[in-house]
Every structure is written in C-alpha cells, then in structure tokens.
Image (tube, rainbow over all chains, first blue to last red; front, side):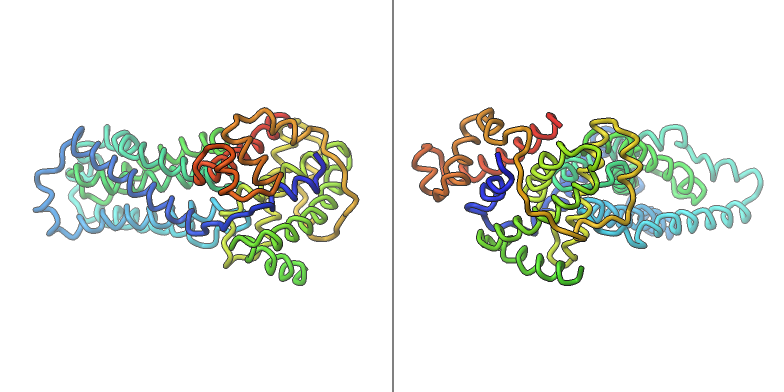
Length: 213
Length: 181
C-alpha cells in the first residue's frame, strides 16, 4: 500500500477523539486498585483494632501523609510519562525530599530515645514482614496502572514502569496502614520505603517487557 | 519551527474534534516531515524508510488520544518518532546505527520530503489477515468511505461494534507491522 493510501485510510471517516479518556482511565485504575488492595488488607491481614484510637496520635497522620504525598508525586510522574514529549518536571524531586524529611524525623526520634528503646523504634514488631506485605497489597494497583499505561503511549518504558510501581507501592502502603500497628519514624523511613521500592523494581523490570507499542 | 507548530496545531485541533478534511491535511503534512526525517536518520537502511513511516502514521493515529491540546504538538510527534525509530533499530539490533540515531539534535520538523513511495510490506495484504469483524468495518468505512451506519447495515453489526472493529483493527494492524519489522 502506498503511504498516501494509508493517509487516506486513516483520515476517512475520522471520529471525534475523547481527550478525557486518559484521565478517566487513570482514576478508574487507582480506584479499582485501591478497592482490591483494601479487600486484601481487610480480608487477609485484618484491620488494626486500635485504628480509631490511633487517629488521635500525631504520628498516625505523619504516616498517612508520608504515604499519600509520595503517592501523589509518583502519580504525577506516571501521568506525564504516559504522554509522549512531556517533561517530567520537578515533581519526582519531591520523592527524595519527603523521604529525607522522614529520615531527619527518624534521627531526631532515635536521638531522643533511650539506647534500650532504639532497636524497638527501628524494628517495631513487624519489620520482617512489612515490606513484603506492602508489596503484596500494592500488586493489584501495579497491575491496574500498567494496564492503563499500555493503552497510552509511554516512550521511556523503564521509567514508566518504575513510576507505576512506586505509585502502586505508596498507595498500597497507605492502604496497608489500616492494618499496620507501627508508627515510629525510623520504621516508616526504612521498612515502608523498602515496601514501596519492591513494586518500583518490579515495575522497572516489567516496563520494557509489557509496555512496548 | 514556530510556524510549523502553529500550522500543525491549527490542523490537529479540528482533527481531534472529528474534522476528516483537516485530519487528512494534517497527516499529509506530517508524512512529508517524517519521511524526510527518516531518510536522514535511516541513511544506512533506505528500504526501511517507507515501512517505518507507515508504522509511525499508524502510531500517531492509534495514540492520538494521548495528545493533550494544552501541550505543543511538535514535541509529541518528535517523541513518538524517536521512540519508534529506536524500537525499530532495537528489533534489528543494529547497535552501530543506534548510537548515531540517539543524537538529540536532529529534528523531525527541519525539512520535508514529498516523493511518495510504497512500503515493503503491504498494508492491504495485512488487512486481509484481520478477522472479519475488524476487516469489514475498515474496508467499508475507511477504504470505501461509507458511513458507520451504512457499514453497520452491510455487515449486520451494530454501529458501536463497527467503530470498535475499526479501532481494534488499526491497533492490530500496527502490532502486525511491528512484528514484521
């Protein structure tokens, strides 16, 4: 077929394009992924019985904001990486800023604590399982985000996969807080972060394999 | 450069709103720019130019919902062209050409080339390989120029099934071309 014939084929009967489709798909992916993550948390792990009581502690809200703000920065990167020719901008730089903020808080907490209490602040009661449970809870979100990413046009596949993974990890961590009893800053700075980085690595690995178009 | 941006945007915005005449002009101008760009980039692989050009046009068409009217158009096209070019060369695993191609300076919209040619693979033949529920809507609506309603009557499909058939068929076509390349 001649190229001019292809041009004619593509333009004949061209329909109106729904330009809000990408944003609708992203919201649907986030919402459905979060619902499944919640069902996994409530069904498999059980919600924290002290949850309501803990909402009165400032560290509870520090933890929620930590996960939520990282999720927002990740999501901005996801949305931009799905459209060709868009610059990432400064939003991804917010991620290290938030993480370093948590580390500073962790150091302050450890310095103020007695030497005997420090190990408990770092390891909590669940350090061994926390990163893996966050990765598990994040899995449906990662699948949903990659699914939408595939329908759009990422041109940097590894970054697009990694950003999807990080967003899934932080939103997954946010849902996981409904189960998790840990509130200490050193714990959040290490094990929560690791939990978010597992899906990030998986996403970076899957990106070039799944997102080709 | 600014002129090309304004000109192409003035065509693409009505195109996205369903203006087929503007869309045709947009694709024709884009074709000239992309052909010239690919000739420069694929100096060592002249046979690939028309193939990749058609693959690119299909990609621009299939991914046009990822263009945000608030963003400039030329970087959007440029990013798609570079992505497809690198993808092609990775498929050919021609590492030597690849390094040369990653040179950021070369612009899609620097020049144009209008001497049309045929691609090596035959889109018409690839089209025949599609299932009827995709092939017939493309044949009637996109090649014969019938209306969607008309195509729905002739195929016995619903109008939305005809539209979906066209959409999926063009995506499948792009995928097949990519596999061949």
